[in-house]
Length: 119
Image (cartoon, rainbow, N blue to C red; front, side):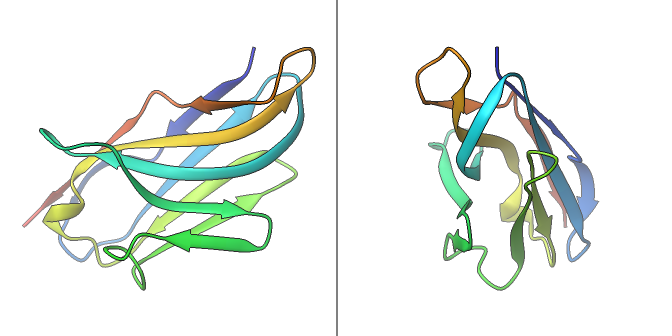
């Protein structure tokens, strides 16, 4: 069984930094890509950032403010959020494209972590 566990969400003020973490665990053979999505109330879930080895990708709304990174040894992905804005308020979800032992390659999701930015 593969699990993704996020941490680091919370309440911050406009302009402050925040760092999200997502650790994958289980009988993992390989992780092909990891990413962060977010969903604000009444909105669809949207891609924030993703990373395939050596190739990060960002939504236009967060370019220059957010940075995605991976620790391959720890099967962990991070999202460093700088200069946050009230419109960044959402539940943030981690996902990962994983091949686990005895299981076909699949995309897994974390449970989500709330980020609230006050003005």
